[in-house]
Amino acid sequence: MIQSHEIPQEMVEINGKRKYRINVQEVTKEGMEGTELYYTYDEIEFSAAIPVEITDAKVAKLELQTSRDNADTAKAEALKRLTVTTESGKVFYADTEARIDLQSAIEASNLWGSTETMWKLAEEFEGQKIVLVTIDEIREASNKALEAKGNIVGVVE
Image 1 (tube, rainbow, N blue to C red):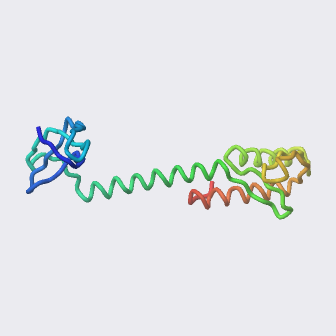
Image 2: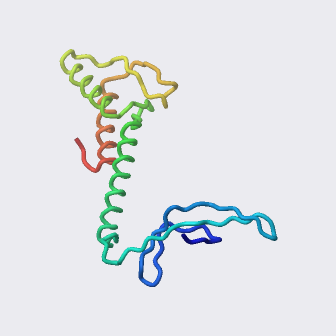
């Protein structure tokens, strides 16, 4: 058992030898100047031959994967909150479900010959109102939604 006035690090390298410090305990002792804090611990020594090192290439690979994971998460969050604004100033949702709805409305208008429909706009537009929009506005919103999605993920559907 080793005693120290400093908080021991979990692993140290001394003269090229790895030493792991375990069973760390705080010990208070009464001294002439009052109560002092000490630490006791056991040290286990491992030879350098034990494969505990991570090579630079492995570190770079792990950092790259972490970076990609963070980028994917950021893209997914951006896609969930995606909105587009038409020339008329109306703000449409543009997430995956909204893009499908926009395309469905365009197809329905082609089938039925309609030129307008009621549409729920994004919260950014006057508190998420349901308003009358033209099919041309829906087409514009759909095109902008695809472009915005492509800008986030790097490809257009």
